[in-house]
Length: 290
Image (spheres, helix red, strand yellow):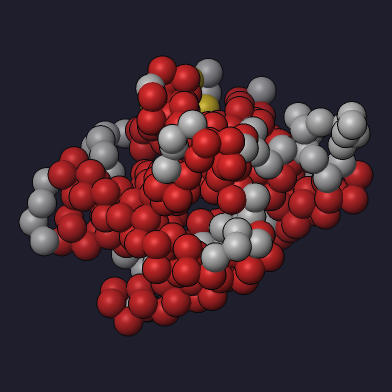
């Protein structure tokens, strides 16, 4: 039982990170109808910029805030400079631009920060907590807490603020949003900034456990995308559920089958969902009433 609990803890830890990345995919998909394949690089930038600002002598809380804010600004600039100029809103063109943008961001990080792995100090020092025989690292508690906070804050933003309602309106029907006076282009830019901030939080909070490097974004992008597809693209709650399910599947596979297959789980899940239920576990049936 203690062993199973340990695997569940590990799965929920990884699943929470996947959920943050999946939320970024979902937010941009809702706003543009396209997949932002640069989302994994925003995850990488959160960790790398956190290490960078911490190295400048900033206290860890300020370094974390600066890293998230800087990544959000990069996300907004990415939409303004790379995505918006292509015009037309064609999803395929946006996807191609985001793939190219991911390569550019990765190479810039390599030249700015170097190829070496970098570590960030834990948010809280101390020994692991013991719960029913399972060890829970203090940083894992931070991962769970910040993921829950991000989900609650996102829900409040969308449901309780005028700005959030404008973002939702744009994601549902952009032309109709324009007709009622909403600046749809600004809402798309805000969606990219918000997605980048969520990815940065994930990269920042996991850096003390796994370290970070310029190359971590690609793999995390695949897993975040798999989580978003598993839950159902366009549905934030489904994205969170997809991330947690994927994390648990990975952990249980590593514990009871073979750790070699752990990273293959995301690909298997992605292919299975695309073949069997393209709209995800919590998506619709795909029927349209005319």
